[in-house]
Length: 98
Image (cartoon, rainbow, N blue to C red; front, side, top):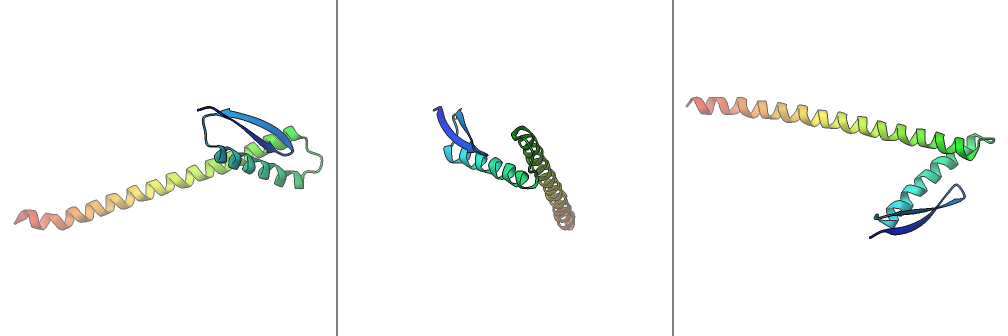
């Protein structure tokens, strides 16, 4: 079911239309709003457009860092799984010879 959700980001109202959870959309909008406001505190003369682009870059950086961390975690899980499997096979080898 398509919904129309109204959010506010940095004093500007936006209407988001889609088949998604309203609370999730509002949470996303709040996150973007917070990112822009943090940037605006340190940049007294920045335009809305510049703040929006810088916030998008910061959020993208956070996304890429999270993805990198997840991939590193996945690699560690794979490494440990392989090590555990090798250890189990080593323990089973003497039993197979009997």
